[in-house]
Image (cartoon, rainbow, N blue to C red; front, side):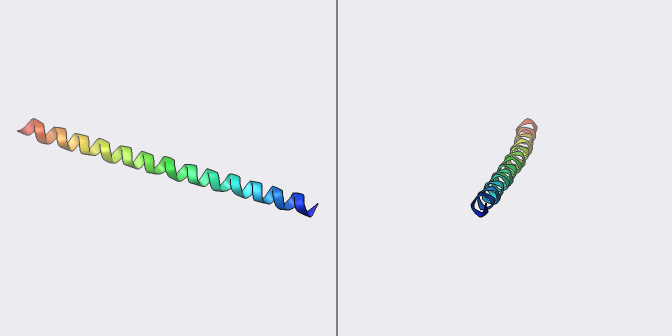
Length: 50
């Protein structure tokens, strides 16, 4: 049963690692999207004033 326990713990750890990686990728994507939106607003304001 030691082998099955080891595999179960390893599988669970892999799932946790994938979940954390997915969370960080989604957070980075959201932050990048916010930065791009603010840049678009700043650039459109700049060109509207010219």
